[in-house]
Length: 127
Image (tube, rainbow, N blue to C red; front, side, top):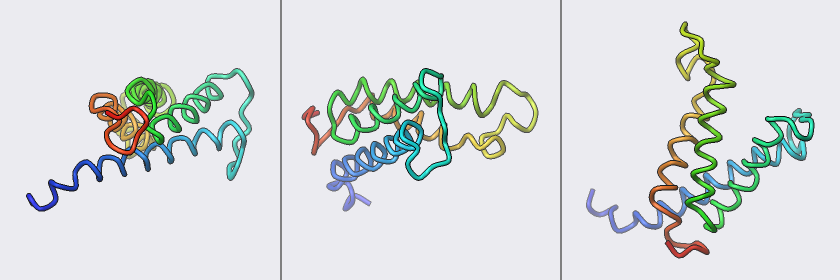
């Protein structure tokens, strides 16, 4: 597997870019209603979450202020999971596969990893 090690910087950059794009697209859906049935009221918690998704996702995508944007995105996804998916119910809803919170948990930890590692190559931050 050492043969793949030389591509780790590129794989990380691709991951950062794809994750940033996907996350910002969720924000576009919430804020602008594009390709979505979302009708979010301006100023609500979901609207602010969509704004964070849009802005932080784009910043992670281009690699600008990546650590801060990823850290804020990670916290937003933690709130999304606990408040909107798990809802502190100690039954079968505890499990992400049941409460449909798997994407929120994955985004939370991926963004935490990005916040710790930084932007890497192909970014405006230059690490």
